Length: 417
Image (cartoon, rainbow, N blue to C red; front, side, top):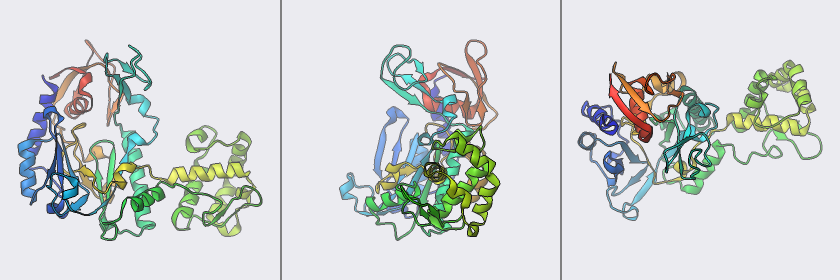
């Protein structure tokens, strides 16, 4: 069975069943782009007058990937960017777990040699032939999706609490792969340039926070320290203090390397653990003053506060946010690397559900035998057991599609059972 043909036919059936394609507002002012299955051809500078015409195109072309512009144009189908007549762009954030450090990557990511096809766990050179022409192959598990979801929730909190956007102006989309796209549609940011978008980006990432000057903190290089911020403070000061509370609440001798992103001395750790109840009481009742907190050495206090920043910041793809002419995935389309749906979701879904609950498409009771050069230990919610007999494994259809889409070059044989 030809793996790519199998995937194409699955996509074809999906698009012909009238999928729930969510068109962007002002569709006539949007550029659309597509990557086809044939030679991975990219088609750009396409426009549609209506949802009906767009869906008709999807049924006819069966794209592997479908995109639309975050920008609005006078003539979105113009063949070059200068002729399109840029009118403005939505503010968009791309949260991709590939950019976020997670321990689970060691269980499922690997490197594929472009010369000999060898598999390596190191990204420096092929462990088989020594070539430096290697490609990183990434996979997604439930832990990955949980981490991406946490960053999406942090971002939405900042957008609403700190920037004053309303929930009605924020659109949440599961990307179909490794994370979420958060769209802000507000007339005041439409014409914002790259510099302005970068400032917003730096804010949500907690860039440039200096505890000598941040309101509510005075931690100079020398001299006495003071903190007036509380867990109820607005903006980053309150966010930092709330994260500090959670860090101290959950800290222990076994997990401090994971919870703290900065090193602290062993005796300082012991002091914090021995006096944990006093620290927490001070944070809950700031009017009494931070006596115990301020007893900590400057280096240790900064390590805690900087860890609190890392605990609160949002890691996003910079290129997507600052690009005012970006193409972003079309909700309702399929992701060509996973076969999962790009799905517009509610805030409640983001809070309470995994994408596995709403974005899996090929969930028919159909199983495949697959032989491959390498299998990750986990894909989505599926744990891959040791290979049995002739190196084959048996997987449900949605996992087979993911294996084909994400790394067809490692698939040696596939058959339906």
